[in-house]
Amino acid sequence: MNQGIREQIIQAKTMLGESGEFHMDNAPDMPHKLFENWFQLAMEKHVPNPHAMTVSTVDAMGYPDSRILILKDLDEAGWYFASSSESQKGKQLQAHPYAALNFY
Ligand SMILES: Cc1cc2nc3c(=O)[nH]c(=O)nc-3n(C[C@H](O)[C@H](O)[C@H](O)COP(=O)(O)O)c2cc1C
Image 1 (cartoon, rainbow, N blue to C red):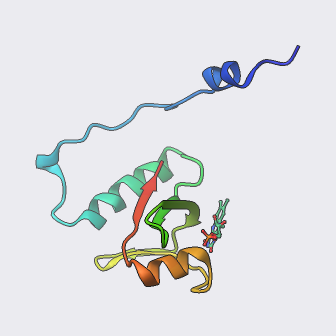
Image 2: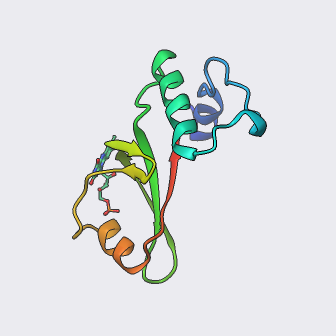
């Protein structure tokens, strides 16, 4: 008999490898520098798809909306992705120019 979804979820492996320590006092002044450090560490540790990010926006009803995008670049001005301004996220960002990013 096939396992139920709950058993499959429980068996899924999480947080493989060790996670680094984080001390606010040692963090660089600019957030993109901290991200650069973490990204380089993720590359060294062969974390799969370290440039894949969840981009969350808000729709016209005020509900959150999320999708996976690929990070294209990064500098002190921000994080860059490529997409269509006609997409749902494009329209949502025109109406509410705020987003949250999340990287594994
Ligand atoms: C691994 C992965 C990477 C993706 N990268 C992009 C991307 O760089 N740009 C993009 O527009 N969509 C990308 N997509 C598709 C988006 O997740 C999304 O389905 C699409 O942009 C439409 O989103 P929206 O309707 O919320 O605007 C990617 C999907 C996956 C699974």
